[in-house]
Length: 332
Length: 284
Image (tube, rainbow over all chains, first blue to last red):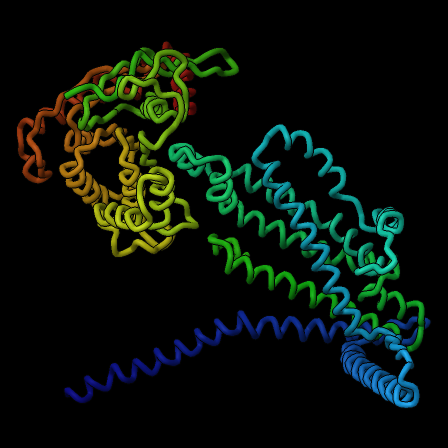
């Protein structure tokens, strides 16, 4: 009797175990299985659709063509690097032999001028977008704080923000190009003009969400925290440093994430229009090239652009989670 | 004992779209050093406005507040406030929240190790030494309020102002906090003004209970002296006839003399008045 009584809970525990297993499965299915299902359906539809679209450059690229092209692009990059290495090796040897013959010979060192590969263009675009974004943040956050703290300043500046905020990067670009050519004159420029053009265009377009969010975050500060500061008679600067700035951190990050997304979109457009080095130029060059491979290479670029944009936001979210006290707002 | 705080004939008039609205009329009160005062009244009677004027967070239209015979015109740490919803800064730990206050008040008067000692002493006083380095979102509502009190006490204020300090807590936690506060008060003997809605709380903690009439033109209705011996014990007092008598007089004032909910028959006559009262609620 006693032994059978003991067995009953054991039997129950197995069913419980199974239940726990299924609940774990359903938990995983939400985070892993469902996205995989969604992705598979998307790939399938893409394949079907691609097969039935004929363009003057051949069939629209399907998933397999894009996969193939990714491998190609990485291989091209490696070949190009090999070529460059060999070029420098040859140059070194040549200079060495010339120096041996004639000790007064001044060695000529030339840079390799091969074509920039897809991976080079990704790197260029990332550097440009980060520079433009950081420049925007350096201007936007202090400006946003001053606007948020001062109602008169807000009233004065807000109309300007509202007018410039919706301006497309394509409208700014010719102006930026002309102004940079006129003002950035140097015999030995540290940065290429094309880089400055792209960067400033990115800054002009991505600055506004940060200014607006920071100022709103500062203006909407919890009145209780302001009262605490008043009771403590905190000096103005301490008040801003210890109360206002930390209080606005979640709003500042919201603005920064919006801005970075805009910056990345704007950059690709600017690079395309101005033929500035980067992923946008890659897309445009392929379009002008018009080979049978062009469309699949462009489609690859589209997917890489999307993936990088997603990654940039994820990185910002991670930073927000580490820096901000409001962990809940970092999870959105 | 001498008068430390003199609230002298305060009027508070708020401008509204439909003309000016008098929230307070000739509120006059003298508080002695070490006295524990409760302000009680229905919501919207201007209790918080009185406290905010003493704190310097808003200015009386006429009349004024004198602290040690000096007029109060702006907020300052010598009139520390314990806010209703704790008002801790969520990005700082309990320790850092108190530290912010201590660093500001004792900037040139204490060495770094003295400050640390003083911050920890105040957190021990409210029994928060075990969670000193936790952030507000990691501790319970009662604990947050304790830290809020520690922050105020750490400023060594001449007057401690408490705006419904335990209003947002559940009944058991509130009783516990009241006992803690009495214990601290026995030790420090601060001058305290506390706003409350809770009749038991007022009788248990106070030396005097200031009962306010309903607005508009709210003012002090009656003042009740609570001469119960200290230390006070809530269980023993529950059967104490003097305690129950005091409690009854507060209840009588609130629910008979200053009845807030009007009878249906008189509603029409007073509809104008009700509107004004509603405004008072919004303002306060």
